[in-house]
Figure 1 (cartoon, rainbow, N blue to C red):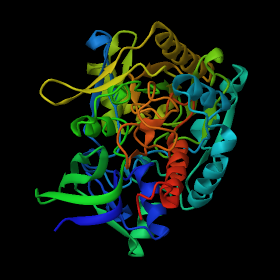
Figure 2: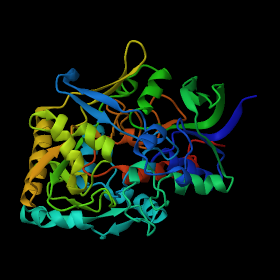
Figure 3: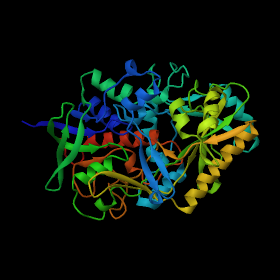
Figure 4: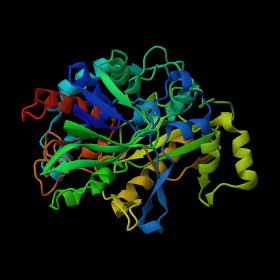
Length: 475
C-alpha cells in the first residue's frame, strides 16, 4: 500500500526545512525527503576534505559563454539542512530596489512591508543578532575601507553566543551555534515526533495525474524505489536541482513550464587576498562579521564586499591566481607557507539572471552562464575595489580566486504572469495544481544581499498558505 501524507517536501534547506518544520509543528502530517545524509554537530569536525565529501554537492560548473570565458564553480550543501548547514549564516533582508526588480521581471508585487512579518518570525526563531566581535584581521583592513568611502558595518547573522569564531562554518558548526534549518526547524519537529524525515532519499519525479500533483517517486537509502502520495507536493531541492526535478516530471507544455530552468542568477563571488607582515589568522574567525554596503546598488557598482574570510588550505591552494593565471610551483608553495598572514575579503556581485539550468540530450545536468558586458564590468569593478582596499591597508601582495556561486537564485520564478513565471504569487505551479516550489529558485531576480533569510521568509509565508489550505488540498 502507498503511504499518504498531507504534504511531502523535497529538500531540507532554507526553503524546505522551514516549510516542513512549520507545517509539522502546526499538526500537518509531513514527509521531508533529503537526498543527502543526516549529519549533526556530533559529526562536524574541521576536516576539510571529509566535510566536502559528506556534506557538499560535488562541485559543478556553469560555463561562461560556452566555456570560452571560463566557468563559475557552483557550491552548495547536500545534507539535511542543505546549504544552511555549511554556510556563514549572514541574515540580511532584501532591499526595496530588489523588490522593484522582482516586479519588473515577473509582475510579482511583494514589498518589504509584505514580507516584514515573515522576516520577523524567522529572525526570532533563529535568534538573529549583530556581530560586532571583529577580530584582528577585520581591524587590519577597517581603516582602508573607511578611507575609500565604503566603511565596514557589522553584519547580522543567525548564530548564537556559543559561536567561538573557530572558522568551521563551511564544515558544519560543531557547537550548534550556527542556526541551520537542521538544528532548528527540522530537529525541533523531528525530535518531538511531529515530522517524518528520510535522508539519503533521491526523488526521481513528481507524480502528475489529470493536471494535479499526487505524490513523488524516490529511491531510498537501500536503493529501493518507493512512492508516497500527498495532498500537496513542495519541491524545494535547491535552485539547481528543483528545475531538473520538474523537467523530469514532464510538466504540461506551456509558456510557464518552458521557463523552468531559465533566469538562473548566480550572485557571483570571488575571494581576494592580501598578504600582510604579521599573522592575521583569518582562518580562526567567524567568517563574515563585517561588510561594506556602499556599492550595493547597481548604480553604485552593484557589489558588496564582506570581511574577513579565507578558505581552508585545500581550497585555498587550488584556487589562487593573479594577473598571469593560476598560481603554481614555487609561488604557490610560498603563498601556502604564509597562510596565517593572508586576509581575505569576499566580493559579491549583482547579476541579471541570464543563466540556465538544463538537461542535455543524455538527461545529464548542464549549466550555462552567458554573462553580459554589464555583468562583466560589475565583476571587474568589485575585484578592482577589493584589491585597492587591501593595498591601502598595507598588503604587500594581492591574489584572488576565480568565480564561484553559493547564492544561486531564480530558476523557477514566482510571479503574477504565467508568461513570465513558473509559479504564482503563492508558489503554486501555473500548470499543475497541488504542486508548489519553495526554495531560492522562486526569487524572480537575484538579490543584492545574501539570500538565505529571504528564502526562509518566503518559505514561512508558503507554509502559512499551505496550512490555511484555501483550496482544500489537505482536507
